Image (cartoon, rainbow, N blue to C red; front, side, top):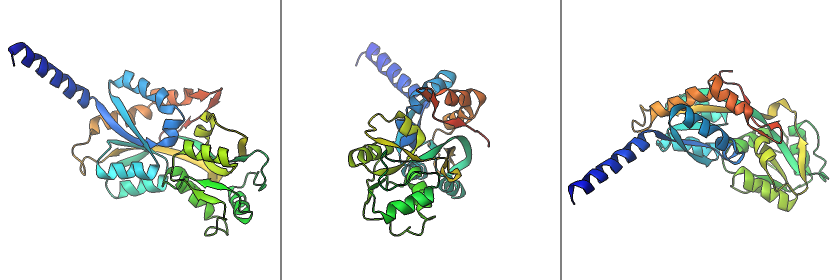
Length: 266
């Protein structure tokens, strides 16, 4: 190898090293990815800090497991109980609220099982009693965890009806299944608003305070995983909860409807 080639090789390695130093991995949810939020949010973060973010979109449970293994630098998820647990275990630093929206129960506009209303527990009980087709994420996501909490509010928790199906899939595929089957499904509002293949589906249950859907950000603990990009992770956590980051979240809308509502520190 001549001197010029060695210089070029050294420069390329240095550039690759620098690019790696200014990037991080964020494990997050399918709802934040499939709603289009990150396509709107992350370019603003990179412009402000110079740090690029690779998003791995999974169910919240799987995303948190990535943090436990040290396969992610930051978690952006929506299951407060699970988030507080991973902090208590020492795998993540403090949990900080970032934004919220709500869950909605989606189903055929004709509503053959007559679930329409504002009481999520009453709606699920009717779904079970009528053996209505119901698609569950079944993937240990934040939405799946919320759905299981709501079933616990009904007398039919262990008997969800013969129409109950777990897909083990993300929010978009679950909505696609519900559209093709004429089934009911619990969804986060953001993914629903961005979902194009609605067929005859409609929002049937909303407005129950128990449908509140909070998102939090957590930096993976470098004491457990020293190789993680803790400085870059802190930059994101600080920026997304700052006035600038919160304004970018509030500005994300589809057809004039705001998908997420900032509430950092609340």
